[in-house]
Length: 336
Ligand code: SF4
Image (cartoon, rainbow, N blue to C red; front, top):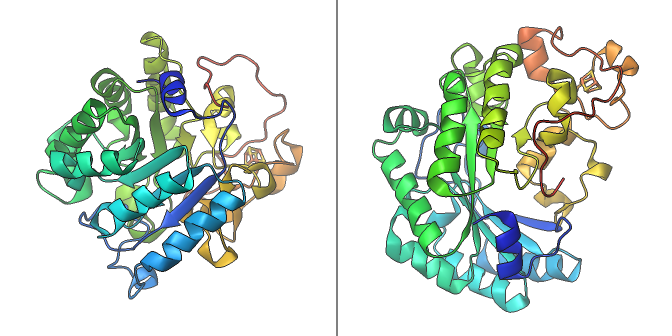
């Protein structure tokens, strides 16, 4: 199902929806090597699950304030016992788009996937980090997780759920990106494959030499991955490159997300200041930096900058000011 069919089927508006992102927990049933919020890590230790009542209040409050999509996120939201109940509530409130963001381990169970779909989940984001079990299982740290994630995608497709695939790009898998993108487009019949450069924080930040790969090394593989959409005549549903800034691949700046200053990133609605989504915080707060040369870049006024820790490790040489906006793009997202 592509985004247009999904929008027709579920009554989604043509423009981007405001999103209520609910982090239900910090616990997880996987052990991804790059994880930025593993319960094993100091900053997330002892963090409690969100209480059901609080989650229900956020859902209501966010809807009243214009959110029309809810994203249930973790940790791993499918190990939160009251997820089906919350999905049902979101549907009752009137959210047209109800998404679960998951590693796919539990959604590989047909009965559980069916339960969530019956409650009202109509879109899901499943993380898959390679086109084969050896790579994916090495990244998640869970043997058999590839099989379950692939099965989850099959279950969700059969249930008529709109599917997005997320993949984290690390030093382990970046060379496989073109093959992976083709694999995801061919096997999951989706137009949404989200490629995310591993953030220089959490577990990846602790072992950058093993896990973080220089942007300049990623670039040729990214170009090939982008070309995989074009070769299949698939128009991507959304901007699908995360944790990049335009100067790294100027001809594909239109495909990048999460790099603009927050007042431009207006599709994300957060119920309370203290409940700031983690992806959001990564592009807006103290983790970002700019170079002196950024003042000569056409994107300077809107660019939130690159990751400070990345630049401290690899230097700032890859971030060269862009002098003019390129106008030729290989692929264009449906929802820019
Ligand atoms: S402002 Fe700086 S970091 Fe942002 S795109 Fe331009 S050169 Fe890159």
